[in-house]
Length: 421
Image 1 (tube, rainbow, N blue to C red):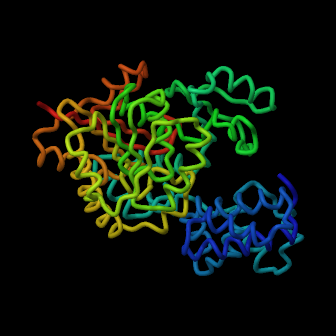
Image 2 (cartoon, helix red, strand yellow):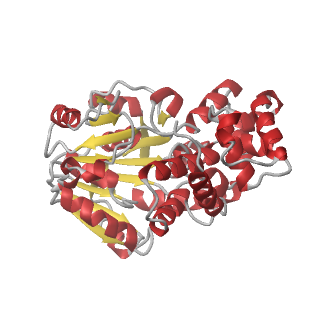
């Protein structure tokens, strides 16, 4: 742990003030801050990023510790004090007696004065929804605390270009330790946070950064060579590239999205991947005429629906403060509409996969159960059955339900449905 310096502390404080406005995602705020302060050294940049994300991860507890004065400065001081630093280390940045007393109080703060939601580092409305769904208090605490940890770096090997063992050996030669992911047959989990995007493995398309949970969603879709497949909400295309790889760059793979910017971000990734079967398609809504022309023609459709992102708090801790129960109400309407529209593309005998990176039942089971009730032509297929066909031993019930404290990946949900004759 490097010693505290005034320069690093004040830079971190400036970045934290910007992030706490919650006007933009914290990672975007930090990217802009680093661009505007190019003279910051790598050690200071690491300290700033760790401090900003650390405060976001622990903010419910830090707010209670700071009580009436939860200013950015007090929050940052409290975070640093809780990170194992002794009071003598604060001498370069703290001179006022009241701040010395405050720091001593941080060390003495008792967590048993907190509410369950605060101890879990989750918004009260999220905690209440999970408890109402039947989650036990100890499971809520375990989930919340796992979501408050930094995520590991997961890679997906592009098996069209290299084998996983070869990539692992090359990473080892570069000085990076990694191990195969527990479930995904083409995943690697890297120790630390090396800048992978600077290496030829990345620039030449042999690897992509992708959480193991996201990789498992591709296996649930299970596309085969020569099929017609759609990634209905493709975004920047991480899952699209995985599906294309599983199809061995054959057949036709549509990448639909309403955002021109997101699809533009797919283009360089697509070029690196070497895939030739992907067709990015900008649509104006889920009812675009391009979609209607494909009704009943596709073998498989993935709906990675827009959601609250509450399963990705390890990477995006600020989402806790930028999402709300009312916002999820709006998302529920969009999720239901998108799933209903995407279902029209699936041919008889075809597969429809609905997925989110949320832990909230009303974005997950709630949407699927309502869809199945309204669409008797579709039936639920147990996710474990599909994964077993892919030689993945993972059974979370009828649905794929992944949680960081149990599975080591982000919080994901997926349901597999088949269109009946």
